[in-house]
Image 1 (spheres, rainbow, N blue to C red):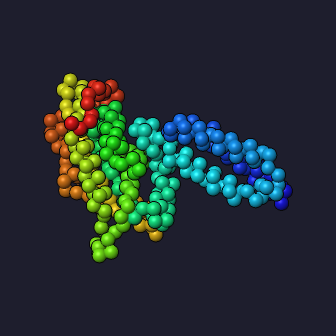
Image 2 (cartoon, rainbow, N blue to C red):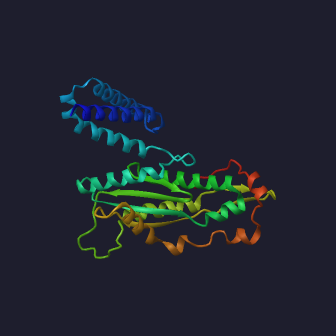
Image 3 (tube, helix red, strand yellow):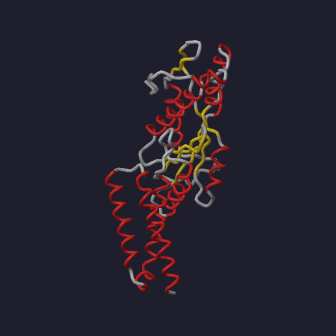
Length: 279
């Protein structure tokens, strides 16, 4: 048993020290970061000094601490472009929300998958720097429009995910299998309206300053705690919110009046520092 405990000690020490060195990447308040660092250093000191009997008794308490810190690290690893959490944060966040549902701390939760409308056209007609600014605008509006307790992340490209928690669960007399909490629909529609109202302008190579149309489409579904993350994602992705209103071709006039940028023009494209927030 001694060799097994020594191996466990070495393994845990290595993992906790990795977490300590990665702590600088966490986008959390300074006080929280200091508390986490103190806890990590305390665990490392304990692991280095604990005798075999104590280590054997306490390792069941240490492992949950390790898992919690790993989840915290994943949740707070930011996308470098938008400063939103990255895809890696979705699984631990989903598991945390499901646990809160099962514990009765929240009544229900909604998952929404957002796709920027025809984002390819933005890159083709305005250039990739403008495309990056469009994604930042989407991210800022979603972050500002959501309650602080809710979650938004960039999955990659022009795809985002939102999880909204609710105090109330689905009504007992509601028979619609596709029922979505009205509060979630209201929040998502506000995001869509704010994005459509945002003013973002771009200079093309022909010196014409144009307003870049913005719109996002959401797929949305209630989270089912008995299904996996992938199954819940598929459910949300398949049920469109306001599809007709927000999936319209917002770039028809751009394609009519302009030509796509050449590769050289795209590389030299830029965007002026103009307002991007809705009025």
